[in-house]
Length: 74
Image 1: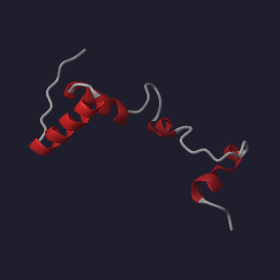
Image 2: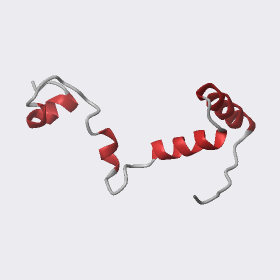
Image 3: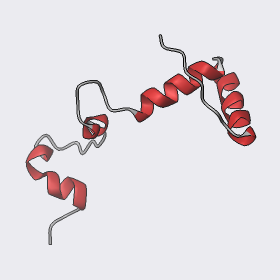
Image 4: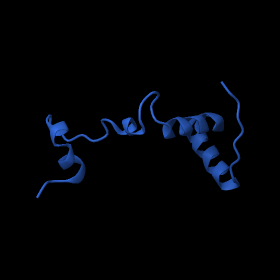
């Protein structure tokens, strides 16, 4: 693990500390988790973070992705 230093303003630190306490983890672990969440999956594009995010119930939705993403065609 590489050690680094991050500066937060008082409000950011207070909120991070409260959230970490509510999760039962350290502030450092909370910050590591926030960084992991912001990064794309290893070796994949940023868009892969959202793969499988939308469920339509339609087994053929990959064939009609524009309708899924942008709504029904006129």
